[in-house]
Image 1 (cartoon, one colour):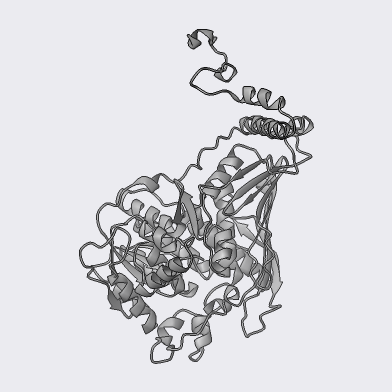
Image 2 (cartoon, rainbow, N blue to C red):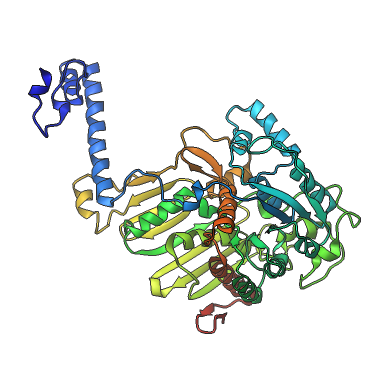
Length: 533
């Protein structure tokens, strides 16, 4: 019997058996005896065998498997009791978030249906419809622009949604002032997606009204607002989530694991950037044809802005271009990059910051810089974090963590490359097991097909990991996962990944950069007084 010829502990590949095929070694031996084509295939298989052996040695050395990244535990939970949701601010980002929560405007559904008909690779609508039903009722909408408020109401009644058509949706009620929405007994939790100058006051009022808060970044427009909001949320006991959806990225979780295993060696420099090169990327958004003093509540829009100006369509639709309403590149884009690095390295607030830049390309009346550069020092970590951006070039420079033994670039894909002067990998480099000219390790979570990215903006956001990630091989909107994490904590307790403490670190760090730029000096964080000095 064939089994009698197999010695215990001996690889079966060396023992071809009737009915079981033959092993790789037998294939190699056989092919070696066949001229020309056989030699070619023999060489190919031999190389593949060596590559697999090297790969196994490298992964063993790194202490890494090919398992998916360790993701937040909340992802597998089913929705519990119904949560009644309100939205304050239904502009571009607000509509994105409500769609991620499961409510899309009928126009969006129709547009994505046509896109899918034109391009079979376009799976946006299919993926959205497969999204988990979060068991929400969108009961309240508040926006100072009538057109946007109407879009919110239409989305709340659209029965084309994840989970399929159920009972007819009652739809939301429109509130003309956010205080009226917060006073409603039909609202348990609010998403706030207004311009930054309203973030702190609305979130404070919501916390004091006992409403759970999902707040868009940057957390506040000023340093002083950070302390007031932190105190209000901490005292209230509500569940607070800051809108850094890239915390749901599988590559970020894997990057954190790699750093914790010490694979990069001592990390002394991190460089991150957010270059863009389009009017939309520079916040020169379209001005809606129906925008007017009759359709926009200008007085309420200005609210806590430090400088009041006459009605301006430019300022309403392109508010990111002025310090009266936000902090430009610092609060808008640096905030994402910093939070990603903080998620991976647990950096906290830097010791110091020095920033520079200017308005070098978009000389259109804005007062925020379109080129911006800041250096943060972390002497207790022996590390410098550099952020730079221009709104007039698409040159991609990535998000790179530089260690003595290896460098890691993180985006939608993660790549680790050994340093040819590495101490840890010196022997394996000399033995030819590790080639420092090639990636040591690449992590591409779950993507098996080609993703349809249809615009320059989508390409930019996808490259930064801000659009989607993969869970169990399926593409999932990271904003959906971030909102789901917040809702899971409301229902089941616990803290979301970007809670008020992480928000405090994000906001203070961004305000250090803004303060340094505006005052033309190096600024420091005083951990005792808890103030920027």
